[in-house]
Length: 135
Ligand code: VL7
Image 1 (spheres, rainbow, N blue to C red):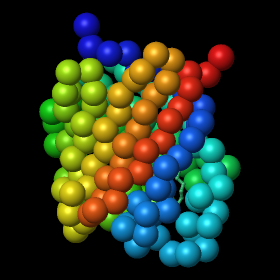
Image 2 (image 1 turned 180 degrees about the vertical axis):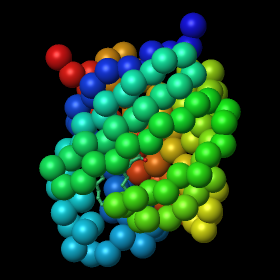
Image 3 (image 1 turned 60 degrees about the vertical axis):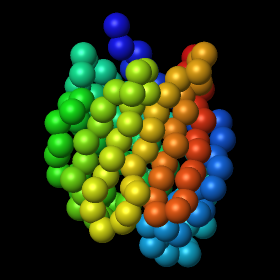
Image 4 (image 1 turned 30 degrees about the horizontal axis):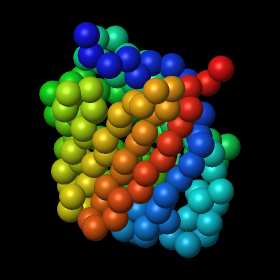
């Protein structure tokens, strides 16, 4: 049985989101707003098929994928780049590689207790967000 990510997860904390956004070339006013946000993650999981919704009062972002199947991701409303994206299991972690203009871009999700972790990587920057399972 793979890990179960499904559910609603509420933001707890952010580390170096600023550095990650700078690496993505996000402009200063947008970063100022984005740094204030407390995103909610809504995850739908059906076997190896996933939908991740990131919801905020400013912008929303949704991505759907199947484990091991590369697809074209357009980060619409974020940095608006095209990536060749693939997500794989690493034991119970979900490891995403976003091939494109930016080097070393991707993210990893894992669960510890009732907390959902997200590490986002771009160029040399690493940002970690923590979420708590919604009541
Ligand atoms: C997606 C934002 C910064 C633009 C707005 C910030 C609002 C909320 O990679 C992500 O999620 C994955 C893993 O859960 C699934 O897609 C995080 C948000 C990253 C990057 C760009 C700042 C403007 C963000 C929609």
